[in-house]
Image 1 (cartoon, rainbow, N blue to C red):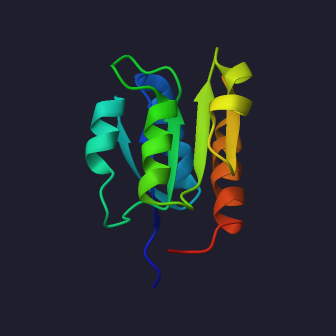
Image 2 (image 1 turned 45 degrees about the vertical axis):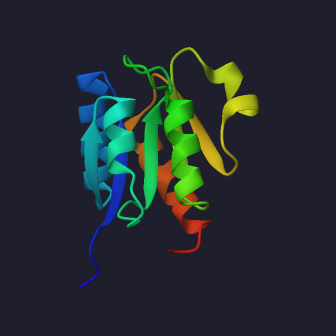
Length: 126
């Protein structure tokens, strides 16, 4: 039996974090949810335990989702990234990492599952 694909979710709004976690779980993914960029950066180490990153852009600590995704890509060049935002969509073209998807809040739970699945299908396994 294949183990579930693990997704790191970075979202400081509890209700959105839970919605994303539940949607991904129903889609067959295992998630680890953190509320800050600092926590996410601490979890991103070189053992490649995550298959994708789903991050809010505007976090309530001293790290943004842009910074988390950039660091994740420095460690794992092909890691799929899904950005979530309510206000920073216009910056995605210039600040987002290549081969990423932007979801503008509010979005349907199925959209995050579709975005992660699509990116994983387009990315070779580690």
